[in-house]
Amino acid sequence: MGEIPILQIGDCLLVSIQVDMHDRLALELQDDLTNRIVASRARGVMIDISALEIVDSFIGRMLNNIAGMSRVLDAVTVVVGMRPAVAITLVELGLALTGVRTALNVDKGLAMIRRIIDAEEGGGAGRGA
Amino acid sequence: MSETAETIVPALIERHHQKLLEDWLTCQVREGVLRGGQIKEAELADQSRRFLGELRRSAASGRTLDIAARQWAPAREVLEELVRHCAAQGISPSQTAGFVFSLKEPVFALLQRELIGNAPALAEATWTISALLDKLGLFTTELYQKSREEVIRRQQDELLELSTPVIRLWDGVLALPLIGTLDSARTQTVMESLLEQIVASGAEIAIIDITGVPTVDTLVAQHLIKTVSAARLMGADCIISGIRPQIAQTIVHLGLDLDVVSKATMADAFALALRRLGKTVTDIGSTGGDALRPRRQRN
Image (cartoon, rainbow over all chains, first blue to last red; front, side):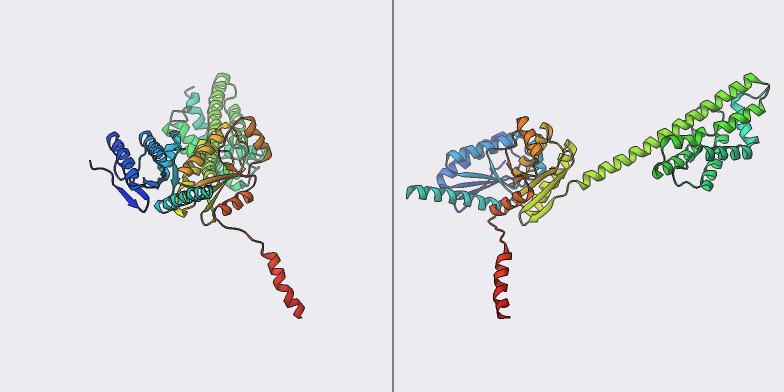
């Protein structure tokens, strides 16, 4: 099973999950992603799950973990492209993914990351001055 | 005496068909059977004639008291047709059953005349015909109930369809006015249509208006939270509006935490949504007045 590609768009990383996730792949992804965030000094991470028809508690926890790790590395995580059926399933499972930001598609996710980074930098500059 | 109660009924109806029918119709009209609705007398006479004919044939089959048997199918069909008509016309179930019960009087009178001086046979025949007509009468009531249940089920489905519209208020703003109690089935429908609309319109804000929800208890609140969470997972923010004072009190008394932005009215929620999208609503009334003034001075 090949690894999951991580694409870079400006200072954002895009992870598009197209295959079924299993434990080892998830751990590899976390490893790859944290390395890439540090190496590329990315400020945002987008995880595209529009190809996933089934998201179980395992993937839900993985998404939460990635968001937590990115936050520690000062990157914003946005999960994009969740299908309606998946959203309903997650809610029924009691996994509201409260620690993760969400957006409808890659476009909106990118805009959201941009907005958050701008707000942080604007706030930082204001404090600095 | 070769005639038993089993054979005496069809034989009697056979012999006195016309007389029985006339007596029965008189009886029906006198007792006001079926007159609550718009059933015409000619129609009633036709139904009665058909029913009496089928009754004779079915009773002659030898299974006089087993109305669920195959031999009774034609008689049951006549009744079914009648009941469906009655239920549609809003005639009460007892009036409908009266169609069958009113046959007792002419039949009993006939039996009395025929079997005069033969008390045991009369008693047995009376009991048989009475039991049979009771069964048929109860059968109409059952049919009536079934047809009403069908109506209720259809209305429930329609209500579910009707009461979950998702409205596009603005580019990127959806409104979901909820009307009626939120149960699990409805929450599912509401959630599905809302999420589908979010995908279709790319909306970022959804306003859930609960003005039409009569009460909010822990279960309804849980359903609301589920809907909000699911929308959030799709990348849309929810605003809950239309919380009445009574419901606000209930929510606090129950210790519920909706954990979502809420506004008192849909108007407030819409204003907030527009503000979040960076849009403003301006009053053009005053500028319009200013624009008119110079022209008026010129005149």
